[in-house]
Length: 201
Image (cartoon, rainbow, N blue to C red):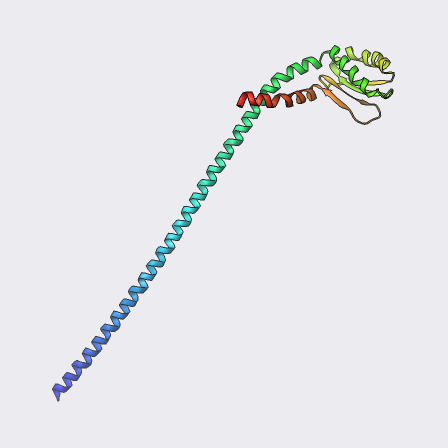
């Protein structure tokens, strides 16, 4: 009887041990699978983070390179324009100022322009002239030019006009400008493309 009891105890023990061992192995296998899944997920997330960081770095590098290229191009264009303006300005400013500061030349120019206003009959004109040429031009405008045109010419002298003149109908409300500034701008527009080509190809 005792042998049977011992045998039963041993069998229960062995079955329990076997079952516990099996459950332990199943739990261990399950835990191992879960651990592998966690590691795989972590690795995938890490790879995504690295890929995103690399893309951001690449985008930043591309943007920075593009910004640097644009800044360099703008700087070069501005420098070329400054050089062009300097050279064209040097070529035109002095010559235009000298020519339009000559009382004799301004007289001829005023006469030619004023005659175009009076082709359909006498028109009273208003002329703004350089203050520096008042002594030479005032008698010419108020006497000689008025007689030639057969109409009154009102002359005003301004320090703002350094050379040349502005002219228009006395009652017309507009002026045509023949000042050194307008001539310089006009001549510069013609010289600029040629100068640019000569300087920069």
